[in-house]
Image (cartoon, rainbow, N blue to C red; front, top):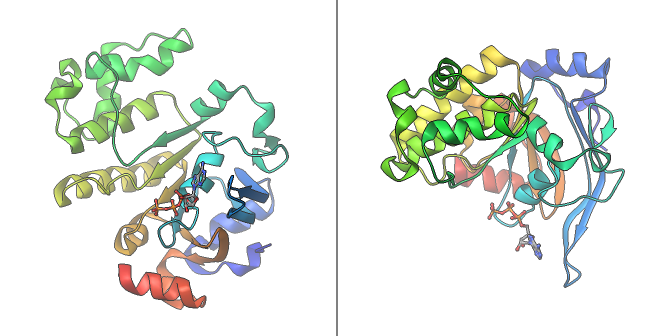
Length: 259
Ligand SMILES: Nc1ncnc2c1ncn2[C@@H]1O[C@H](COP(=O)(O)OP(=O)(O)OP(=O)(O)O)[C@@H](O)[C@H]1O
């Protein structure tokens, strides 16, 4: 298992903190084998320190999305493998887990109804009705004007819809945000908008974020530390600013292609 002492530099302050407390999320010996007996994840171990943005990079098909989906049980991990604040996530009610561990996908899928309806949906499930001001504040967090509130999903560009999906995730006040290539379907300007929002979130909210991305530039802009995944295994964890120091040959070759 990778030890905290493997990390250096910028991420150190978070990691020192994490050494003294349980990490926000921990993955222990997580393995997934496909129906055809292929190892999709192989004994993955990683600590995700609280308040840290962890990037996840690696070649296509290496298991990044599967790892991410295990963190909020979109794929059900075996008991005793994934912990949130020290509690096995398999023991948590799945809806309350997904409120605490929100997720954004490549393509935003908005529910029928207005943008405001989408943002109000999660809190409403818990009996909380968000006021117009609260909806507007969440839109502002995602860098959207309050006039978007009444729009329907069909009226939005894909970049705007992704920002609504982000505001909707934030409405649940998550402790951890999982981002699975959140800008891969967006044009460069929409990508820049989402990146700006994520950088502000990181600076202002102290939220724990795990982000899969194929863009080294994006990962270096947003993440503190980066997990390199090759063939279902975490082969290295590095400070995001020192990705060029990756040693694993496949990871190095992959990073070279994405830089
Ligand atoms: N439910 C499943 N059953 C069988 N194979 C699966 C299943 N889910 C994923 N896989 C396989 O597991 C491997 C890892 O998939 P995963 O989507 O996690 O990779 P990834 O690193 O996120 O890839 P990409 O960068 O292309 O999104 C792939 O070969 C995929 O086809």
